[in-house]
Length: 184
Image 1 (spheres, rainbow, N blue to C red):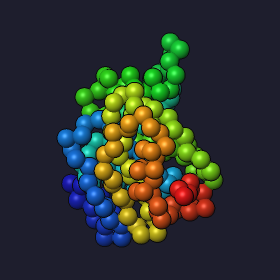
Image 2: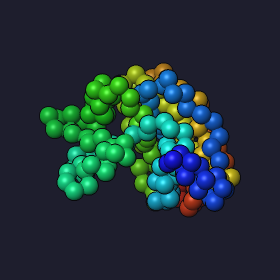
Image 3: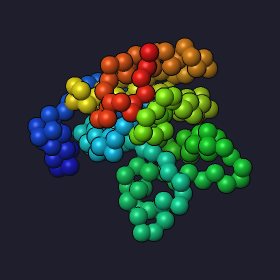
């Protein structure tokens, strides 16, 4: 029932489409979601998740998962990030991958919805450490498309891998396009 409702709203009322698929056999990955320029990106992700019926996750500081809203954040795919014991963020997130059978982590590498003149590379190093592929997810408000890319297993050559990944974001316009990172 939820899928039918999401499909009706997303495709018919909003006029969006989903281009590409995520192979359900890929149980663990980093989803590189860009551009992240607006709070509208959140519900696009919710609709995409509901329509594709692919579990998608995110991490947040562990304090978010306390009463009264903790149950909701978990229900929506959230996983509390515990950095106690001196772990850095990359190690802490990679440890979550080790514990989970299915974990498809959505990350916005711009790190902000404001003007982003660079992307943060933590997502890349998490993928390396967890030995999982990176799948690009482009929210293109210009074409009203959510584009799902092909998986790329990082090679430990950041520059070369980013050159491959960025091809999926060329020409993509965020809701507030001047705030999105521009790949050259």
